[in-house]
Length: 426
Image (cartoon, rainbow, N blue to C red):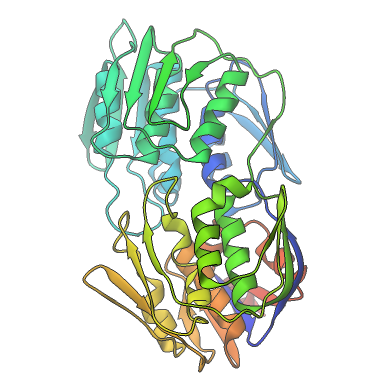
């Protein structure tokens, strides 16, 4: 277990370069096994999830090497094997191997997904999609066994009952090599889905409509990688640093940003009174603004991202007055609240509404990172608090934030990550 030590009353200043999108990467790596050639990715974030996915690839006899943001995946000697439950359970997005293996071999045996505990995320829509493509799905004892008959997968018309990023990606991966035309309706429109479709199309797939609510896929026999795929910048990482810069910064430049991906978030910052200089691929936040409270409601893209409702909390606490957040996607995403209360923050949740008040008397203490975004929001608060904060279970933060200690150092902020077992041995 890792713990993070954060000294309080440190202001951010300097610049930070955003890495590749975590939510793209965790779909692109499983997608790589569909190729009949080695695949190379660039701008890959150095996060725990990537290294865990590489372990899963290894179990399938797929070689992968990671160096300085470049990931090479060679699926040419892949074997169809049941995927281990342990690594899968620790990593929500590893369930994308379901769709990828189904597309590759017509069969997948995968342990039930794990990942952040932020309330129920059922996979019924994934299974509905697989069945529509002609797969037989059996669930028993925490394992999903998906098979196809001798005819393999065939195109189908699939209408999702609710907008789901996971189901959209998983069914897309299965349909890419299915015979005939698949039409997916009421799909998610996230930039990460467009990134995945771009990668597959560059290998010879025929996918149209990614980024709209209807995707059409004409199945192909073979996918071959001809060039390096550069992963889009992480809009959630960008939003996190922008939020902390506005709350507690003294001139911060956030580089490598696709600003359109952040429209709903940036408009909330403007509504609060945050000054920003927005250029083509970077945003400068001078800091020190007098801020007004706002009301936020999360919704699927292009709405306000659920992954940013916790990271924006430290900023809301600087506003003069009371803000509210309604998370329509994951109402149980509240693990940060009791931890923040222990630091003296005015934040509470009742009947699905999170209320955030002006909080100036914050003090460091021992807290716990319940999941990725809850954990990182505690870092933002700890930097504004008096004294030192110790964040236990910091592994959760490292799962989703690329080289966070280095990046904060570039913003004149000192963080320390200590491995519990190492500290016990000294």
